[in-house]
Length: 76
Image: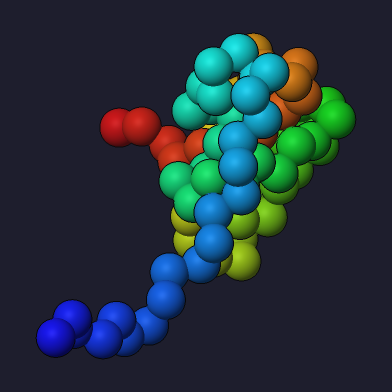
């Protein structure tokens, strides 16, 4: 008899097939698109807010897929 599955994983959204091969810089690990900011200034304000509210160091970068700005974990 098959073992019952406990707890279901959230359904992943399909990646946009036209998004340059689904580059990681545009997609979160769960398959959803990252939050996009319209300018570097707006993205940098979000990094500061994340640091102050959650103690998380993030970097802002320009996305080669959509041309907007995203946040990523700071690489050490």
